[in-house]
Image (cartoon, rainbow, N blue to C red; front, side, top):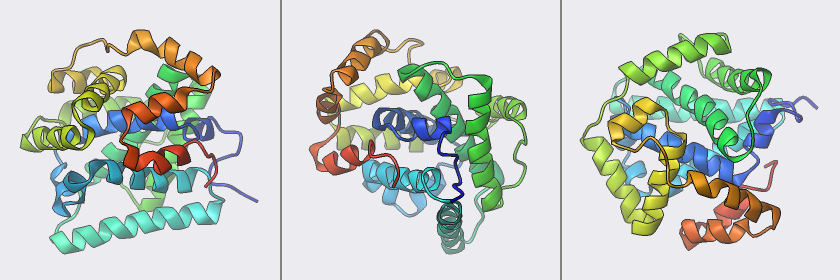
Length: 254
């Protein structure tokens, strides 16, 4: 059976671990808030109303692509494209191609950054695997102007970080919503997680430090995983209402 992502690919390792996924979306949440097209995320009102629920629904789509056989993954990608087309129709405008590219670029970048923070450095070939998976996702969705190589992606990624980000009232509102839904202590952990994985440009715009307070604790967290008690840490940093979703993140194939 042909799979959209090879069963031995590092992409499955990245997206098969709950802590890595949470770091991916912590970083992406910070950058989403700065994107000049963030108003599209506010159009339906679902994101500010339930940012954590939105996170887990997005994770479900991504994992249905990474762990599915080829045709099922293509159907999931087509479903995402249809959802976006419906939003565009309701708003009477088109989401810019650069905004689609930005989302794909974030998934590539934060997949690499999060895995390297929590696991090990990736080889160039492994980074190219990550790029290839999300390039094929974007290509299937009909996104125009995608870079065709990992090297070209790196250059375009840097240009997008400089051109497509700005701090706005949407930025501040989205962070306020995260604080509201997480509580003060968990919100602080979110900010430190974002500081740990975000590129310099994102940290600068958000006023983050260059070094996260979590960095010295990563070794301790890795030890907790070896001792099989990392579930306790996840329970402490995420609201109890999402405990089933949190447990599902480590289940591998969906």
